[in-house]
Length: 387
Image (tube, rainbow, N blue to C red; front, side):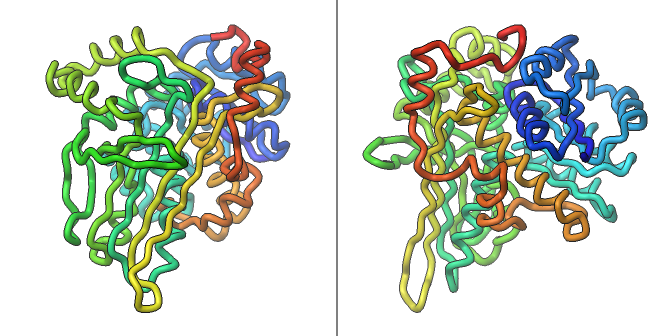
């Protein structure tokens, strides 16, 4: 068994630790700064392949001591984006592989610099967006002789919206605010540019349901850099139900809460509920020339909550955790093949979907199982305390 250090016992870290430990090939050290948080998750897993630690990973000295004592082969950061540079520094200094879920552009650039000259893998942006959406879009890109436009669209949405935002907090509140408040990388007329968040509003219809999409930060990952100069237009937008963008513009811009993010975080977490009954909508569209004709190809998928180890996990947990676990599994299964900084588009879609963790992205899912389990009160506990 390979030892893996998973930092953060929150929504995503809980499932990452569960997937890896249930596989039988990984022994997980699950660590969290909140005393007892990791232990609650480990108790709920009831699996001998995962052990809990109270560890503040933002304390570089404490993290270094843990790594030297317990010697993991790799570290997986499920922490907020602003913690990741410290973790990556320790990974580089102590000779570990590094994986994270960050959507933050500046953090990714710092990780890229730290990866220079190392024979270990540094793979940021391993989640859903950035992450899987880049892998899916890159697969479509390979089918074209030349490119015109690439559109990446992703949304994690409640199945049954009933509040004014038509939204539920399905993942990190810090991450949502960061996406909505920071400049967004795009390619316009062949040039890499920064565009404003919450702008570029458009309508999308998928399987008869109408959505809106608008600019948010970070989802493009490194795809723009990889294909800069080869495509006229490339952008990433977040999918929401119609009306959400207008409400967020009021909060972020009208009430100036983009400049007071702590207040915005408290407002959202006090007013917007969490849910296990969500759906992740994934949409990539590539337009270009094939055999002398202008054509478009799409990758469209909806992922619903699924049961892992007898417990129900939300769609955003499933897609994010399975994304990073599949990349880690692919890398550690072929350690001589990969080294240094790895962009997500280096991985083939087929390899991810055929991976034992990536299979959770399979098409054809429905909301039936989540609806039935919620109705029967059989969702199971993701942590022993029930929080």
